[in-house]
Length: 343
Image 1 (tube, rainbow, N blue to C red):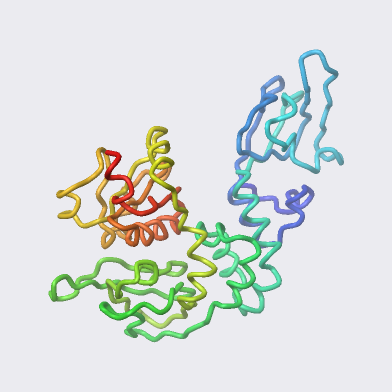
Image 2: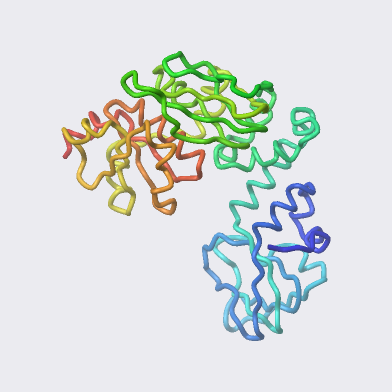
């Protein structure tokens, strides 16, 4: 983490961030200290990092026989990231003892996108709490929304005051809205086969719910009740389908799925346990959709997953749930029926 925000403001494109965005960037940065002669990166590297020179001097060389270019901190040449284009055009070596701030390229791009596309909407929609909206657009779900759709999506979110004990959605009813908790907490209850409802999850500020019914076309599979007073933001099913769903529901065919599995992806079968026992793909993982929200922490977030069910409807709901949590998720188009003949 970088604490000196004023120092960071000297760099481009960090100088384009709002105070909220700059604070987010500083929290995501790490400080790398190099001794003279230490290598920072090599020509041809395709790493996903952005480097800002804080102190010292770095030497950039395009090939072993070329004249090196020296970049000294606090000069105009150091106001931009070091050799940002990928693959790297230069090899960077510390000419003196050097301090460099490092941030992930994708994260920086998300922060810049959030600022530049949403800033004019945030104050109007978020009222006295613009930071809440900024956190929202930096979340994995909203960060994947195409830039052109962000402003429209923000304008379609409807604020909703909620009271302690109020039932927001009820198990068995049709789905109509997708909800985000802007302030407060909620409890998720589920009843199986008419039994007494049991608590399956607790939700807090920033959590979302209600997507399963919108994605699967089935009725609500749980009841969500407020714990204390709070405020929700809701998105209608029509706007959800048009603006948010496509960003987290990437479909692939059976040949693409097979290629991904060979490279290390895993099939995630979200059917019930009994369906899974009757027939399943080799090496697939069974995690029924109804338990996905509370058990997703057991999955390896570094591994790509391909969600599958019989037809693709439950797999779509599962992909959206996991996509909101930052997983690299794909949906097998057509479900098991599309791949079973080839196995």
